[in-house]
Length: 211
Image 1 (cartoon, rainbow, N blue to C red):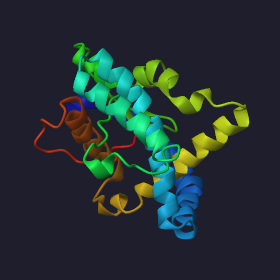
Image 2: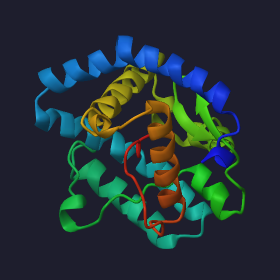
Image 3: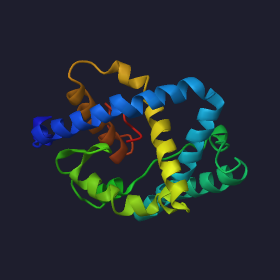
Image 4: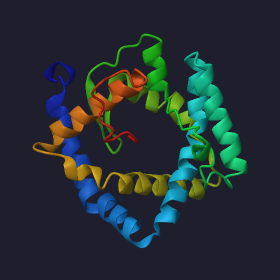
């Protein structure tokens, strides 16, 4: 993996910074959330944010020339928003129509843009040069949360989404072995390859799939 991580010295410093924030703030909050919030409510919160992600899934499905993916995203959003009471219930999963996650980094990959070196972003965590740029351009503009008004709702939704995502990783992180930096990097790179190739990779690790 060394050839994919030429910025390792810098990345480790950012990883340590992120880990310190996680240890002091985000992880304890996520543990409290997991303990205090009933499981059905947690699923509803996760479904709500998953439903909002169908908007970028649709946009990127179109941009990638994947009509089936775009149609799935549109159908899931429409029916989960209406029949699923604003997306709190994933009614389409029940009929076998699962989410097909797409983002602008994957779109750039389809267009032939190489990933570039592995890069750990402050707060946001594992990424690479291509996906980091995508995150702060098209991904940002298609994220419905960033258009919530008033601003207080935007920040509240962002915080709740982060806590919900972190809570979903509490079990998975127990399987990290050895050097945490290396384990997280390898898991991210493996899972990202899986996503970009639409599951063609034989060795995909789903850890950090929401990052």
